[in-house]
Length: 107
Image (spheres, rainbow, N blue to C red):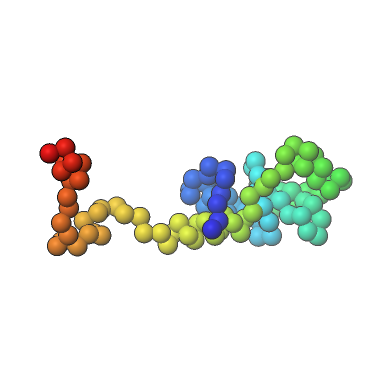
């Protein structure tokens, strides 16, 4: 199961994925990253990737724990296939008997 631990809404996930450069591997704090063949970052606005002269040491020292773009794509796909119950009447058979167990317990 894919879990996104950054409290992102599905809309935020979609925005990150839609704005990602085609070869982005991950995202954190407004920046897209790729670590192969070398560490590079992208601000999502300009056309070019930026190289670091220290293999991303600045980002790593600042707590580099990016979200993988593929994990976001997976979470979006799972969300889109989930059956969200919007009206229980669409999911319960008309012959189903519904009992209020709490009312029965207290007479």
